[in-house]
Length: 128
Image (cartoon, rainbow, N blue to C red; front, side, top):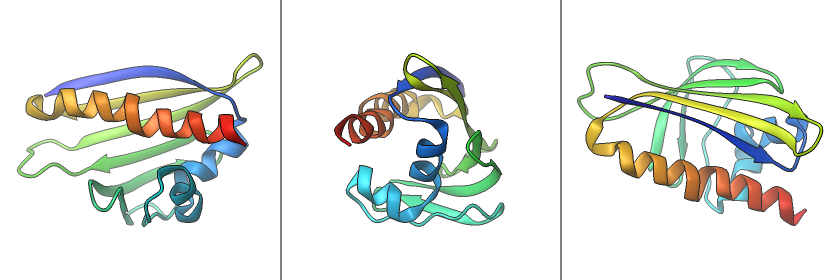
């Protein structure tokens, strides 16, 4: 199991980014795919046609999202925490921490975070 942590600069405020992470209609705008999402802890979510599935654990409006991402047969929960920090220069510094990534999925997860998830968010906010 591996952990991954990275900061991303997003040209929008935390108040703009939070719904892009938690509202299924806004998620669809930047991913191009339907999403199932709720801000109710304990509910399940799905993004990118089921490529990402899991359970919503904790929300702090405009500040934090905590989710469990499912991996088949994994003994320990894989937890994703995204914290949004206001940044006067760049809009928001998004702090990603993803723990307990299965070794065989690590490279794909890092690529996905960088080249799909956060690049999609950044491109979306740069275009509006």
